[in-house]
Length: 213
Image: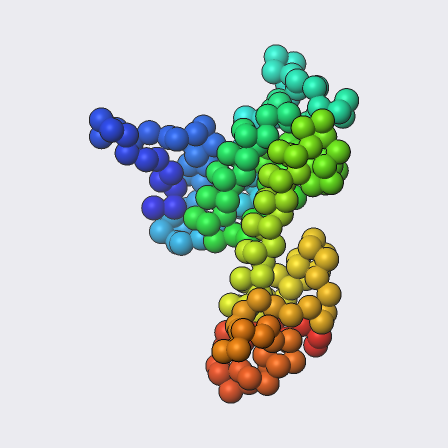
């Protein structure tokens, strides 16, 4: 069921692994009709609202729950300790879990909006300018790789123009960049033109021809 994010504990009780999942169920329970609860996915606008609800309910600073302000003297929009990359990475795993369940492509911008992590701070992690630069840089690069892989998969499997645009805008792909799949028997990576020719007689989903966009 789309609004059931509990897991079964050792004693048989249904529990939430993290408060995020409880907020998700509460939000969707109030936003969806009975018929929509049986659907396998939710609307992208509703998913954006869901992420904002998670942020305001858990991570948004307040008068009684203030940001730690220990990271590079930047203005933090979250109560999280930005130095604790392990916790941030765990939250990314939860975000990806939600994306998989509701059939959304993960993105760094959306993840940042869920926990109050700005695009500039994520880029700072990736560029390795933190005092704990190795852990932050490697972890943030992994996040980016996961998001890029999801977009590439959607572009290949469904010929999604939106996914191709996302690869260009967020990950620096160019029109003549080869896609990773499929590979011919010799192991040589095919260009978009070769892919189009090789699979022109196969019905959709088609392999995207990037240079025609």
